[in-house]
Each structure stands twice: as C-alpha cells, then as structure tokens.
Amino acid sequence: MEKINTQGVAIPRLGLGTYRLEDGSGQQMIESALALGFRHIDTASMYGNEATVGAAIAASGIARNEIFVTTKVWHDQLAPDAMLRAFDTSLGKLNLDYVDLYMIHWPAKGMDLNASLKALMSLRERGLTRAIGVCNFNLPMMRHAVDKVGAPIACLQVEYHPFLSQQPMLQYLRSKDIPLTAYSPLAQGRAASNSVLMEIGRKHGVAAAQIAIAWLMDQDGIIAIPKASRPESQKANLDALSIRLDDEDRAAIAALPKDQRFVNPSFAPEWDAKAL
Image 1 (cartoon, helix red, strand yellow):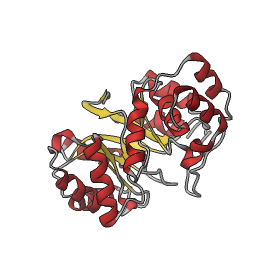
Image 2 (cartoon, one colour; image 1 turned 135 degrees about the vertical axis):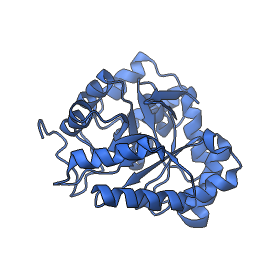
Image 3 (tube, one colour; image 1 turned 135 degrees about the horizontal axis):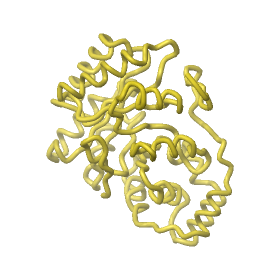
C-alpha cells in the first residue's frame, strides 16, 4: 500500500470509510477490511461507531502502530474546551492511547477559527494525536488556517469524485504539499452505473467503481476512503490500486460533468467563497 508522507505521518492512500458501519455487523465488516490489508480506518464522533472501530482494531490482532486511525470532532464542539472534551470521549470509545489524525469534521458558522485551530494544535503538541487536519473547509478557510494561523494541517478531507472538480483547491494544496482525502469517492454509488466509467471498465476488465478509485489514485497527493461493507467490495477497492489508466481514459473522465456535489448540508460553508 502506497503512503503519503505529510506533517510527520505516513497515510495509506486507500482507506476504509466507516459511516453507518455500526455495532456487531459493523465490527465484522471493519475486521474483514483489516484482514484483507486495509491499514487506514476513518471514523468520526458523529458516526456513532468509534467503539465499534476500536473493538475491530483490538480483535484484529494487528499492531496498533500499523493501523492509521482518523476520527473527527463535530461542528457543535469547536469551542476549545468542548473540543478537548470531545477528543477525550472519542479516545475513550476507541479504547486507544492516541489517534493518528484528528480533524474538524465541518466548520461552523460564527466559529472562532483561530481558537479552534489552536485547540486542535494543542492535542498534537501533547502527543494525543500524531497529526491534525480539517474537513469541508473552503479555500479561504484553508488559506487562513495554513497561511495566517500556521496550523500544521496534514490533510484536507472533502467530497471528490469524477463528477466534482476540486481543481482550485488542489492547486493550493499542492503548493503547500498538503494531500487531499476524497470522501464519497464513488459519488455515493453513482460511479458504479456511469456509462463512461463502465465503458472504461470493460476495456480494463474491471468494474466502473474500480475505475473511479483508479482515477483518484492516478493523481498526485490524493487519498481515498470509500466505504465498503461487503468483503467483495473491499477487495475490489484494493484491486483498483493495480489499474493503470491511459490518456484516452483520462480524457474521457475529464469530459464528465464536474459540478455534481452530493454532500451539501444546510450548515456547509460557501464552497466558492473568494474571501473570509
């Protein structure tokens, strides 16, 4: 598994998203992924499954330092004291001594961004998380966090798939050597039935969803965390790492509409904001 080195940590480029993988069945699914070779597990306090993730890691028998664990704080817990309490709760549910990456899950309107980032940084300084990151920040927020506050952001997690462009953000992130982690990399299942991706898949003898993952892995500085509950789907995602797209494939995917955002809650930031 190829890894991306950022802010002192090495993140496996393909991870397992765990949203809605809960309780005993969820634990079995996560254990399956670990048995197949996944070493990057992404969870969040909002998912309600941190205890499930922790139990799966404990049951796997895999050394803790071989598994990269990400969790996140929800947007109603971004005041410094609240964030520190939320972190302690997450760590307890995971039953771990530290996490590898702790992230702000969503920005909140009216948040004190400087104070939230400093609280996040304090967790890293104390060794409770090896790295920090943010999710769903727009470009002005990222510039503020990195350029003004100087926060050591290890990665940005945002929606990214063949139907949504992130080019302005990617241009900025690459100038700072910050990777992008793509959530919903299969466009919430839509990639599997897209005719263009299916045609490319036929050419390579693979499924359309595997082409979507291969497209992400074909780009510099990209990590992807598809959710997959069935062992067959988990293995298919891992197998996508060996697919090599050609220029014809890239051109066909580049021609797809790039304005389809499927995760856009009422509390989302202004995605195309030009200034804070």
